[in-house]
Length: 173
Image (cartoon, rainbow, N blue to C red; front, side, top):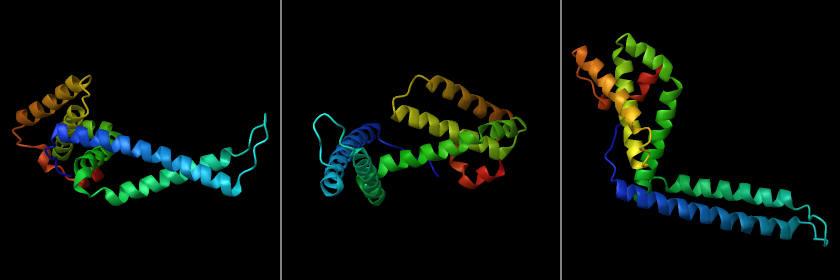
């Protein structure tokens, strides 16, 4: 995966609108499915006693989540969701790298080129996502880690960049 430039204002506005529409769709579909299932299969309410329709409401929520997931899956390649889908994929890849981060860092101390490339990509992509999501609390720690990896590459006389990263490099760790 290659890092892409993302317009932060466009990403934030699209993300906010997407989240609002998704939440509203989940609420409306959950209520609709729940009410429909209760109308078809529910127990009639007796004053002062529980209706026993909890499982129909729960099934309505599950059906709504499945429907919304299927719709988002179908629409993920639309231009409106381009930036959102890219950041989502990037976060998934960061999670894959994070699960192997201790091994990657250990290999980087041994000057493993693939480990250094992976770390450059990881910290550069973390920085990008943190800036897009306005997560500035831990940005200084990421910048520090990125600077250390860049200095290690310079000390070794290597000209490495995050653009050299390929997902296949993770198989080595």
